[in-house]
Amino acid sequence: MAAPLIEMAHKKPGRRKSDPALNRLAPEDQAAHAWYRFNLSFPPHLVRDYLADFGIAPGKRVLDPFCGTGTTVVECKKLGIEAEGTEANPMAAFASGVKVDWSVSHRAVVEFAEEVAAAALQRLDREGVADSDPLHEMRGRRAAPILLGLPHECHALLLENSISPRPLHKALVLLEEIDRRSARRAHPHARLALARVLVNDASNLHFGPEVGVGPPKADAPVVEPWRLLMREIGSHVAILKDRADVHARVRLADARSAMKLLEPGSIDAVFTSPPYPNEKDYTRTTRLESVVLGFLRDMKELRSFKQGLVRSNTRTVYKADDDDQFVAGNRKVQALAEETERRRIEMGKTSGFERVYHRVTRLYFGGMARHLAELRPALKPGAMLGYVVGDQASYLRVMIRTGELLAEIAQGLGYDLVRIDLFRTRLATATREQLREETVVLRWPG
Image (cartoon, rainbow, N blue to C red; front, side, top):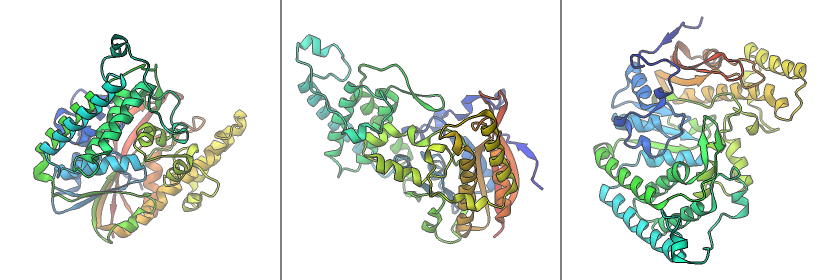
């Protein structure tokens, strides 16, 4: 029988469980975490809470198989705990890897930033493109500059109007100056800083929670925000340098099969947040920086990227997918998929995506079952696991109790269900119901 739901005691007094501030970075957590972060990443204090609850201390090793932008691996390294991460999104895997690289010196980061910024600003000035003064051209009475752009096959990957021509030109000039110095230690940190500036300062994107495009910015500074962020990164590595040698590694890999990269019996704990089963296309969240920094160059690479993901939405489903075989005998998953298809037929929904709703439900839970099955050899006996997941009602308002189903699947694979903790709630727009975000706490008996 499943354990009762237990609320965590980590929330601060006076905060509602639906308070979005639960996800915000506290000032003391800015170092490394703030270099680049998904807007819906879980907060570092949640990692600390569960590591303490699991009894994880230096000398243990933690895995985050759905690493995202590295909250778990960064927090582990800060605590002196060894960490492994795997992530199928190349931009996110790169970001996480840089965020645990504290071996570069403060001086190297700052000198790199000042040198690159000076070179980029000089080049922009010669071209008649000021970084922070949109009237520069008019005062200088120069002809309209020739702006750099992306190749057609790259530009076709972007959300329409996600960045305006002038900020894009500045970003590409800055990127060229950064990459001219690719042998320098601060080079990866400089590229990551540009990724954050692209999204936060230069683009027309907004997140709420799905990525969208807002009113276009005719112009926006790029070089100066990047320089200031690099100085901030430099100050952070100076603070973190005493933990620079703590093992923390992130590898680009599919969480459903990545466990072959891990040594048998090497993991003491897992803390992670896999994608939720909904219509959020996680590949869109990092599309702009993935394209500009060269992680995605055409539709073929985008397709390959999507095929490495757990099938959490209809835009990542392919004809040959077969993860559903891993839950073929799970009656609750099958009933949920059948209810979704029955409701689609009753409502007369006939779009290509709607026809796939029932299939993506099976594929999602099948992919998670495959992941949990593959993970077992890497776990030590008694290893503790925490999976942060959320209820969903995206598919024709059919309620998916993700945590409960994931817990049942895990139990069928030999895991012990310790409890299911409530992290927070949020209001579903379609159904007006409160959706739970929960941490499914498991134990591997060995």
